[in-house]
Image (cartoon, rainbow, N blue to C red; front, side, top):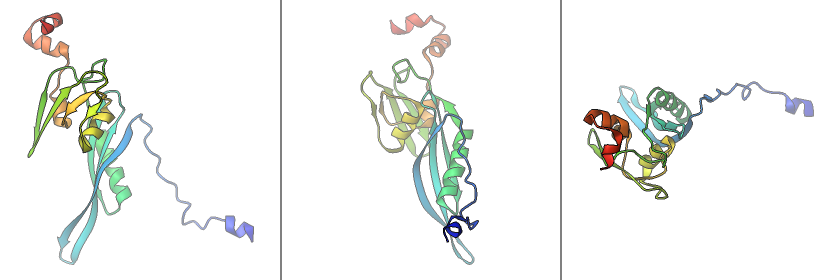
Length: 169
């Protein structure tokens, strides 16, 4: 009788898809239920937003829709890996330049560097994006758009045509 219990019925023996082992961590920001009205009634789907990052200056945000939550999360994780950007960081795990503003649609965001030991002072999805990017000290609100506008000190010095030491005078 014990041998019958140990046998696999085939229903649960399907192999699970392995997660990509590329050094990126995943965090689910939001899962929403969305409906579409069609001729036969309402179609139910799930919309997931996922942030992936290696905590060393690379982060990506992705969105995916599917009829099941797990499938939507997988799709959005794949989408996030396709949209990876590099975040400029200093040795103190903050941003190199002053305030950075970003606009995307109706959203307006602001990001400022902070002194060591401050931590990430931001809420919700903003905190997740910054933590996954490896930022440890930051103030305000930020999204990918604000991060993309940031530049390293050497880039600013090259644009102005002055040596880097002149930036602090």
